[in-house]
Length: 330
Image (tube, rainbow, N blue to C red; front, side, top):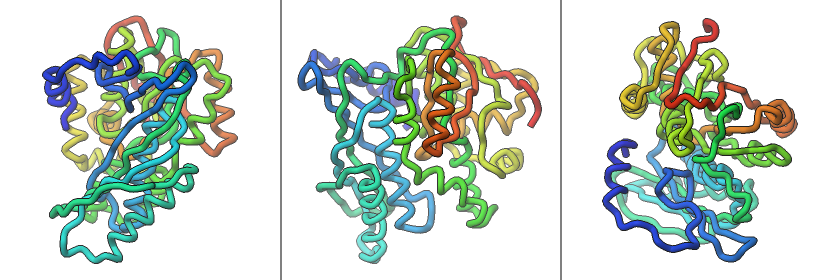
């Protein structure tokens, strides 16, 4: 759902009054956190969506990696998952099996099992996971506690929404999707583990609301602002070219309109294509981390040792709102 519509709907729900709920809906965080005892809390999340690639096994793996990401973004460790699926009645059982195997294999890569789930009939396939994780209540990573002076780090390139849209319309071939698929099927486990020993003030993962949407939630919750250097933001090959040709999913365009309505300020040198990429609706995107400046280089090194290429893309500021600077040309 559109972020603005969702926020309006949630405001009409009864308030959460259970004192054991450490993270609920008020800050639009990645998952709920429920305290069981002083040294243990559950991380609870669910995510599912329609196919974004043709291969059913790959679709299942991407959907699972995307669902698991919410637990990593909260500083948690997944322990089990349930599948949530919808398939057309006429779909080949082998195709359904391939989707489920893709998800199960990715869950096993994360060290867990899919121990049940629920399926329904639907004209359009959908698949994802409800994931349960655990975390120390004193070590929960929230999206709302960034501090001015923090460095913003991003652990995956942007552009999956634009690339998958281009592939569906045959604007690009399978070869142009290789890097994006590899990224979407990569767990954020390594990116989360690399945070060990660093002073991390806030974290989230970049998914459907795009970088600007998730960053807006981060700075809004913290009562702060942010400055992004567009030239330092990693993007996938062909994504900028395709955006300049007008290729972008509807969700990306909505995200950009919302960012502008919320007061995002772009330097004149940040062209429309780059603005779309910064708002691009991602699937199984990277972590966006607000980390103490003194630990930024340490994190980048620790992430690289785990095969994760983290990029410093900006800072948290005292000035409200988000400003996007060009820095240099691409």
